[in-house]
Length: 252
Ligand code: FPP
Image (tube, rainbow, N blue to C red):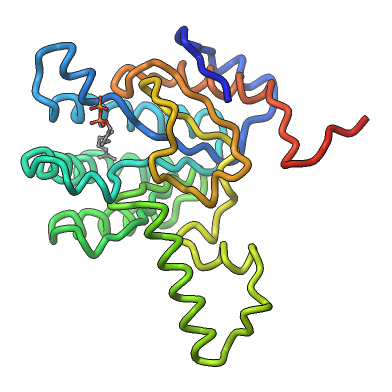
């Protein structure tokens, strides 16, 4: 694991000199601290964080990533004060209303995963509009994790396999890691090559616990609202220097 204590930036020209990861996942952290440093209410930090979402999606498309997964709202976030939860849901609806057409125009596809049954009508409608409007996109595929928790996802996958065993459709001895992965929300995409976490916290926070098994991790002190595409490009350049061995030894 590496921690970039100093802001680590790069240009698109530097990124274009070599390969980029196929899939980058991001824990967007630090909105509350960003607001606190400015004596602003926490929702102002989330609003500023929404601009970084736009910036990073554009940067990811520019860099040629295939998949970008953003942790927008965790299952644990439901326990935050009601006004903050309401503000985050309102921002989601605002985001869809303002960004939908442009995302579609740029060929960016957005899909959402998580325990979506917990969302209110407005948020569910906004997600359906966003997924519908961008369904034909073939450039970057953005995955928004909303009301998501990895432990819940893993338990749900166990339940679905157990149901098939109980129905006599599946022999427990035939359950493989690949088959298990197919029971997760993320079955259709490659695992993240790189996880970025902003705001300096060295935690996974119940995010993609199965899928991050061999991902490289990049933690930066930059707070999410200050995280620009130059910071994303810096992380992509840092990733290029990693020696990914997937538990094997390096070939001589
Ligand atoms: C963590 O910061 C961030 C969140 C819980 C929400 C992330 C939301 C956004 C980036 C904006 C909305 C996004 C979309 C896609 C519309 P924190 O509040 O935990 O910050 P702190 O640790 O400094 O308190």
